[in-house]
Amino acid sequence: MDKWEYRFLFLTPFTSRYKLEARLNELGKQGWELVFVNNPILYFKRKVQS
Image (cartoon, rainbow, N blue to C red; front, top):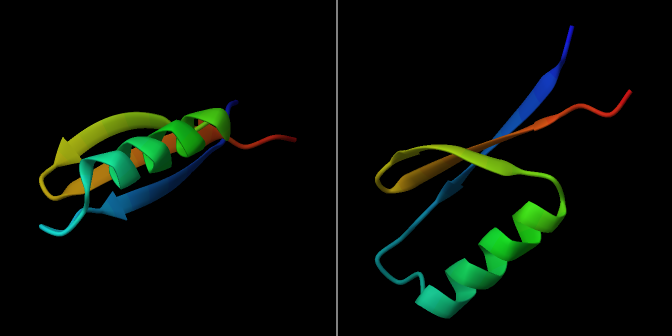
């Protein structure tokens, strides 16, 4: 059975587009997948490496 870990990213009105894009790209490189958006919170998950 797969195990998952989760994290969230809280956006503020002061979050710049370029910083957000860089952060999302970094999370993607680390294996995080965006699964849900409930503005202003982005939810991510990735498989736990065993």
